[in-house]
Amino acid sequence: SKKHLYPIMLQYIFEQSLLHHNYCNYYARLVELLHNHFKNDTLLHTQMERIYQQITEQTESGNDYSALCAKNKQVDQLIGYSIFITELEIKGVIHNKVDLLINQLIQNITLNSEDESYKCVVCLYNIFKVLYKDSDISEEYKVKLITIKDSMKVMKVKFKIMDILERR
Image (cartoon, rainbow, N blue to C red; front, side, top):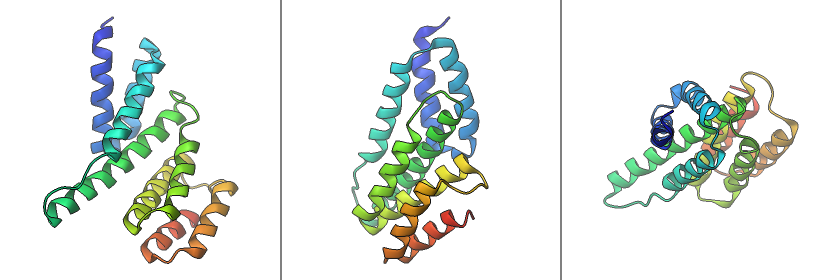
């Protein structure tokens, strides 16, 4: 077995999942197959942490246009990361990550700027779409989101929360 290629393949799959979130289900399946073969939890969790840090530590630089592009890229990557982590947990490759991620995102909605809040809500929307499909989200999350929605002043965040609650 080509154990030395596993870290490279894992890194590549993670990076691709950020760029092409429509295929996260397939990327998660690849990781599941690789993980069943190599069984290296430490490497998997290290890769997850590294890729998350890479996304969240991006700094804005340059003019307004390049800053806007960087911000949009970060949102896309966070969405891909959220979907990918959810798919990995559904497949049983990782455990107890999605609930932590959801609670962190819910908490961050009220603590951050308008742009940050919107990023969090869009990530939640995508996680819930994968996790619950067309079913209702859990009552715990529903209560938290209703509370936030009722006090939210930023309309685009409020409407996205309504989309989550109404399962649109």
